[in-house]
Length: 456
Image (tube, rainbow, N blue to C red; front, side, top):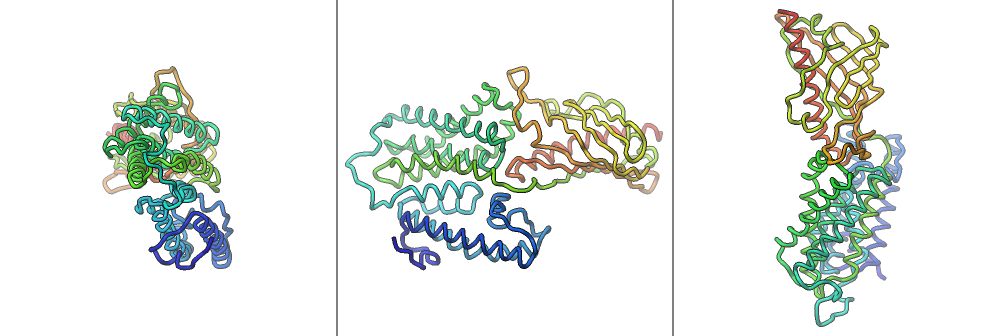
């Protein structure tokens, strides 16, 4: 084995397995210690190796330009040479294994970088492989139907095992589950389907989609998940399944003989690695905020009393709540002023909200000490209890702010601060913010109606 410095700055040439693994390990060790020294000396903050598993951006975990601009820029500048070297190493290793060079983009994708690392560490150089006269893996089916059946069957089993491992054993709904596993399933299904004979890309994509559709049906039939959560995850999972299938199809199309044993090992080893890396995430999930406002044709004093304690709401007409998403029914309060306890009763149970600020008639602020389930799943069974219904989406505090407007009117603004430990955060935040806005809107419209009726 010979290490060459130009492996790190030139994209041309080849790199075999052993130098690739050594260079990758060395670069990671050097970068970790530089990050640790930089953050401690300039910003007085501890940098743990587990910080690399908190957020998607390599080396910038837990930071944003708005929160820590100096630290963010410093780590970004430090990361650039390592990003350069890492991408070029991957390109050379892909060229050496005669794999598609575009797979190097996975190096900058959270979780999928582990998939790429396992693949490049396992797959040998093209020149090192024996050259049998016919296609490899004679034990695999030759017919299109047999190949598709085996691809779907094995992929479904792998995805079921990975899902149970992540949710029930590791109790983690993270990047590995929602990004890594769908990509691996698409890759694995296309790999098996094309193992004996070259097939059309369109057919590889259909096989991958069939696999993920069967998995969704089994989740519902086996009471692993409800229909609502399956539909919410689908827009994220399906494109990744297709991308994985394109990658698997391209890998097989560029290799002769087809279907080496190392390729089949890649998803089997990468999936546990991707899921296990998620458990190293340190620190709490980010605190998210949702604000919704409406104008009320009544003075703040009239609006205030309906904010503190409002009567029963009419049954919801919104399709979202009819699907099973929890919705507010009424609010009750015990006591008066700071220290009083407000219960906002939802369709799945009450939010317990001790009052922390009572500034009548301007601001009512409260913490949240008990959260009900966020939804009732659609399921053929009487009820199911997937882990994410407890503790994975929780409100921490909320408030109602009343601002006097000209003409005896009031701007009523509702705010919720919450955390969810479903990753990628930004994808699931689209859903959670939308749902919380709808909940806010239901309450604000009800308060507006009551207050304007009193004003008249």
